[in-house]
Image: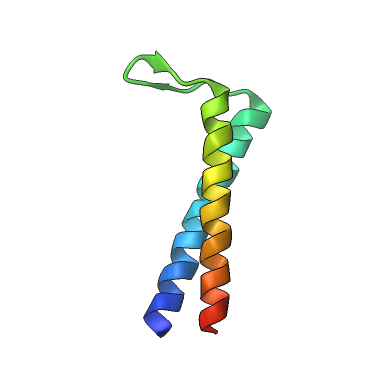
Length: 66
């Protein structure tokens, strides 16, 4: 069970970093493009919500495993 707690904690930290990076992109209005296509800011908004949700759920699961 300790490996599962480690997994949930590690993945939650990664998702938290991703959420913070996307939030920073929104707050600083930074441009982003992939293969020449401009990515709108609302995509980062969805990424913040999704990564934040996954991070929260992961931390909750890690806490349940004690």
